[in-house]
Length: 262
Length: 197
Image (cartoon, rainbow over all chains, first blue to last red):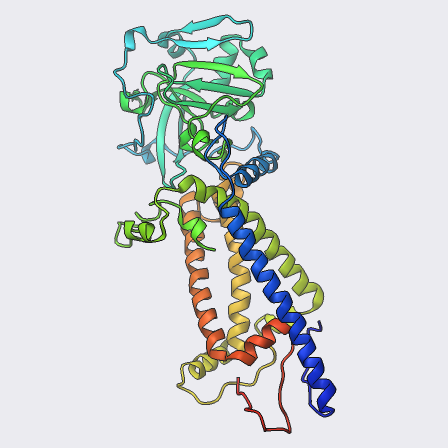
């Protein structure tokens, strides 16, 4: 097809009219076929089967594939040198937004709380909150982002995950691909790719706005990971494990992107 | 086609101080899409590839084929677009002379390309605000980037509605020429009805 205007002047009436009809036929057939194909493709996608519940669940199969492929593509841009923007403490919200308490709505047994870390050797470290508080504290004031669309500048304090790993001699474990974390009652659980977990701004937080972490915000210890959406920021951590496979993940089972990286 | 991303839950409902509820409950119930954020996001992150690649191919083709000459606004377009508007609203009888596209079309079609680029940039800025922090900064921060991204989407809806209405008003011969790529103009045989575009 030429892009210039073609004014068909009906001088030699019959052949021109014929030509017009022919080209009309071809174009409209193409248009209709493409239109029907587009609609059919959309319907096929919209009614495509839902994946079986595994590590991920609830998503249309082709869409899950797209999420996983997009993850692979965008992971190429991940770097520990890319830091989340930080703010002065004065900008942090006084009333910090609370979305859910899944996995942390039973009464907290603070006295008996221990962080269980499953090592590769099979050994389980049982770490008290005081041992964690003895490590170098890092403060982080950043814009917390939720998949629902809201964001809020919040101030958290705790130990950097990298510092925690180093102190407890967990370097061999970080050779694996994933970190899993669960609440003590296993009601909420998340999986993180190792790079994101080892990002220098990932912290195990025990303070909020310079005060001890309130129960509603995940006392005694919660995850704050700025390179992920809020759904990965597990409250009331009970155990940590390491794996070469994706650990199970509460929201990924319900149709959300497993990676959910920012 | 736009439904998949209207699934975005109540997030932009609280835009400002809830004086504008973009997606009130009745809207979701009407479309049968309550609380399907995960699904909406999954669709969004598939279709972002189509829209972006389609935009890239379109712009590349327009440049290579030289079709951009018909598309990019000219100096006189701004003034003429006003006259076109007056004409289309039946305030003015005559429309300025035009080639393939009139001045208003040139502006609108170029604007939509600029908007598309804006959507990709603000989209990346909110999709990976830590990795593409410079884009987020460029867009005035995460929150503002979201607002722009949403504003642009409203712009597409607006464009779409006007576009369709205009196509219907322009009539069959115009639509036929859009599909086939050529226009039939009866010159010296006014037997059939001569359509004024």
